[in-house]
Length: 150
Image (cartoon, rainbow, N blue to C red; front, side, top):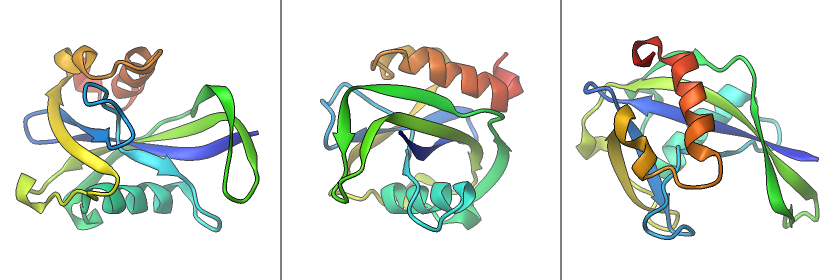
């Protein structure tokens, strides 16, 4: 079974992408904000909740650019068991593209979860998206949702 989740590709007015370094990561590893879907949530509710939880960004500061046509599937190296006892072999990630219309001072990190955030140009994502296949897969969704980067 694959755990359903969401990922938020967020750009600012400079066309830079928002990346997060989670407390559970080494300091050199970053990711796109996102997380799992809770019971009773749809994909859109989940992505806005995850953005608010991790970054404190209210939906009024975001302009929805698009939703990925197909999810990406990630297979875990070892199965993960939740607190409820469900075992997941991987994650099914649904991507959303957003434009952030706020200012950095409005970003309030969940300190128990996110160590730091960083705005990164498309051309420099390779320095931060270091997990297996992360750069390739994230780039494919960026090109799908943000045609200006083709």
